[in-house]
Every structure is written in C-alpha cells, then in structure tokens.
Image 1 (tube, rainbow, N blue to C red):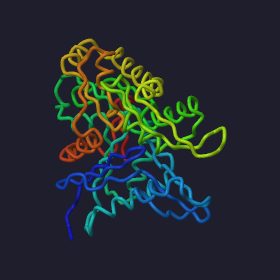
Image 2 (image 1 turned 60 degrees about the vertical axis):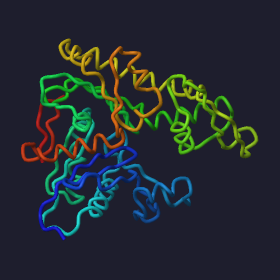
Image 3 (image 1 turned 180 degrees about the vertical axis):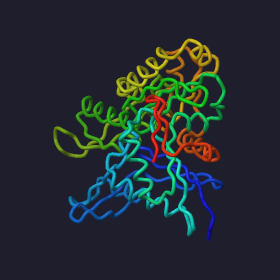
Image 4 (image 1 turned 90 degrees about the vertical axis):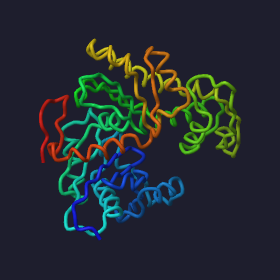
Length: 343
C-alpha cells in the first residue's frame, strides 16, 4: 500500500487511452470504449472487454465512444471510465493523484472545462492540461524549450494534428478529422463501390495494417477479404491488392497533406528554416501507414522521421512532463487564446 502522492499522465485518445504512472512507466493501455445497458443506464464493460463486444451485442447494449476527435462527447461516461482506469492503477493512498491530461491544441474553453471536471470527478486532486503536440515532441526526444523550430505530425484515430513547436509552446497548429478511423471508413467505401461487398470497420482496419499503403510497395501484396455481397445478401470473398489501397486512401491522405501544407505556409520564415534542417517528426497509430513518411517527405521536401514507438510516444512525453508539474499552472494556458484557464 502506498501512502504518498502519485502523479499520473493520461493520453486520452479517441480509440485508445494510455496511462503513465510516474516512476513506473505506462501501466495501462485500454480501448476508449464503454458498453452500456440502454434500459437502465448501467455501465457493463469498459476498455478491451467492451471492444470484444463490438458488433455482437443485443439491441439493449450499446457501445459508446466517450471521446471523439480528442475531446469529450459523453461527459458522464468519460468520468466513469476515467474513474475505473485510475482505480485500476492506484492502490490505497492518503492523497488523490495529480493528473496531467493530453488534449488537442485546438481545444475550446468549454472542452477544456469538461476535461478538467471529468478528471476531478474521476478522483484527481489537481488537473493539468498539456497540448498533445508538446507531449509528442518530448516523447520523440526533442528539447522543446530551445528557440528552435520543430514540426510534429500526430496522426491518431480521430484527428491528425500538425504543429510547429518552439520555446516550449505551439507556434502554429492545424487539426483535421482525417486520421486512422477515416482511413478505415475510406477502405469500407472503396470495397463497397468497387466490389459491391460490405465489410466492417474492424476488417478494414486489419486490411489497412496488413497491406495498406500510400505509395507503391516493392512487391504488390494481396489479401482476401470476406464480407456480405450487396447484390445477393450472401457471404462472399474478394481479393484486394496493395495498389487498391493506394486508391482507397487517396482522399483522406490528401486532407492530411493539406493540413501539413497549411501549417508550413503560416510558419514564420526563421522557424521554417529550422524545420527544413531538423526534419518533421511523425507519430501516432495512423502515422505507421506504409509509405506515409516517404510521401510527406516527397511532397514537402523535408526529411520525415517516424518515431520508434508511434503509438506510445505522446504518453511517454506526457510522463516525462510530470517532473515539471510543480512549475505548471492548473488547467492550461491555451496559446491560441492567450488566456489562462484555471480550476
């Protein structure tokens, strides 16, 4: 049993939540999902257990994604989910933990307040918000306090965030809702249009991970996909190639590239020179899509590096920031609004 204060960093993602405990590293990695009984409002399962129930539940049990595009969409479920996650990793303590939560730089004041209130309701003593771009940069080993420009592209499940960082803050940022889930939906639409075959999002995700790409592979890869034929209504399978994936993912990848270009256009010339020298850091689960780093490099002319552990980079960065909690304000100073948000 622990009787001292414990600091926790939370990367609250659309599809996955990671919790980093100071001194112990990442101790929890769960799906950001809640299964609820609609008839009585009772929470049945959370995390990976709820994910296993997707598409296999009776009508009264509904899966809820409490986080959409990096912000809270269902306050009550988020608070209950966080409370359960925090209770799993904190044994008995005389003090409630201090909690650092990663949020998008484009978050509004109302969304900030919702995150802070949900964390306090879940059992936090103090809540600190950190822009996820900064956490990703720290996780990638960048010294964010230097007067030196760095560009970070974080492609998560719900949003893609491209940001330029210098002197410990976000100088320019652009967030678009074209990310991992959008890639999956684009694959579903493509298979439906080309083969008259309906597949699920989970099948699309597996297809994306196995043969998905945005540039031609050295050798064309093939995968058999099973689904429901839209003409006969019967099960059917088709063979899909990696070349098909390039075509299927063209539209969402174009949106990601547009966000990158918009940030670079708005970046001050001095910082642009720094970025061209330092390169672009690519992170997030969506950033692991085959050839995406090479495509960004091709389109921008700037060296692009995919971080080693793209899925956990933001959580590790937030974990390292825990040592600076005593110097941080509660809530977050949103640089876009230049005004403090305090509890």
